[in-house]
Structure formats: C-alpha cells, structure tokens
Image (cartoon, rainbow, N blue to C red; front, side, top):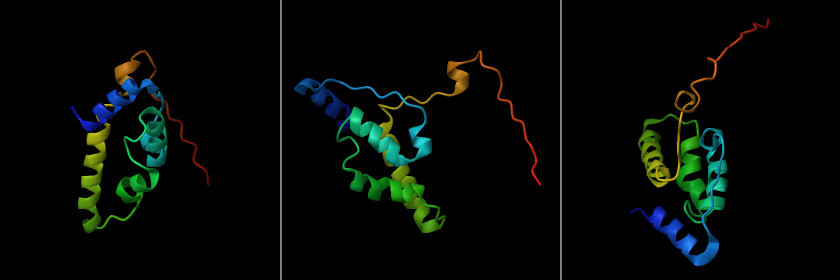
Length: 111
C-alpha cells in the first residue's frame, strides 16, 4: 500500500471524510490546476504548492529540450505518475462513449 493511499485512509478515519473530485483534463491544462484539485480531494498528497512547483511544474512545463533536462524531466514525470496512479482514472472517448459520432474537423483557410 502506497503512502498516498495510507494518507487518504488516515484522513477519512480522522473524521474529515473522503472527498471526490470530478474534472475534465487538469493534467493537460497545467500542473497547478492538478495540484489545486488534489489539494482539495487529498490534502497534503502533493505537498505544498511551492515545493510541487519546484519538483514538478517548473521542470515538466518548461520548453527547454536540452539533453541535460530530459533525464530530470523523465524522472519527475515517472515520480508524479507513481504518486497519481492510484487516484487518477484516465479513459478515452472510445472507452466511455462509443455512440458518439466521429470527430468532425472543418478547416477554413484564412489569407
């Protein structure tokens, strides 16, 4: 059992009760939104915002593609995925709504 699962169980036992956050795509928007949602649902899971920014956001959201940063970025991404895996359900449209029509794209060229 991971520390994150134990934290959620301890929070529920202390009378704070479990919380659920239903949302669209916080990871695709930015990691600050992810931190905000999880700070509500599981306080303390990702640590204080300044620490989270230095350990994850700044590294994963910057545009620098240097080889030195790639290794650090990969390690940070894997660490964050490990923390989130028990709590994040990621499904595609095909898995939840097979009755929806295919995506329609209309391109208007502007000159």
